Image (cartoon, rainbow, N blue to C red; front, side):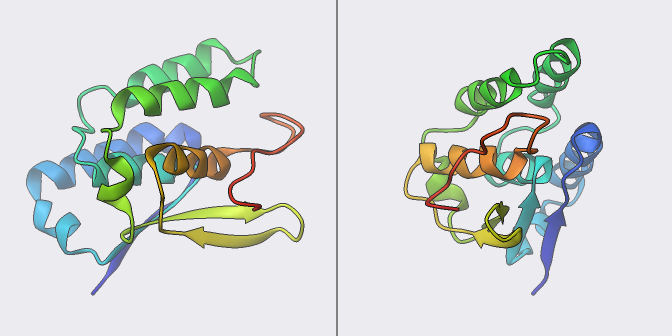
Length: 150
């Protein structure tokens, strides 16, 4: 069995989304046979949307990218925009669809170690994990969001 890793790089979000859209369309067996899908930062968003079966190629990432560029001065709003877009596009049972297969990589602030979470109790729990994975200290705020004490 193999795994897929989507690294974080917000400006490569459209590229990663395009790769996943192409795999969904041209070779869905590759995506379905992966035992684990790891995502860090923006890569966790693409991994989640892909595992939820959302049509990645049909514009879900475009509003996010445009908002990031348009609101460049208001960095603190990016987290709220991210939450709103995830709430809009993720299905109600997203946490059930991804639990066990999606592995979101978080950074524990206290010792800067990586922590991987793969079980999500609710859709809100999943969204909080994604927000924590995407948080960039000082750039997006002073106090990082918290996910189960991490």
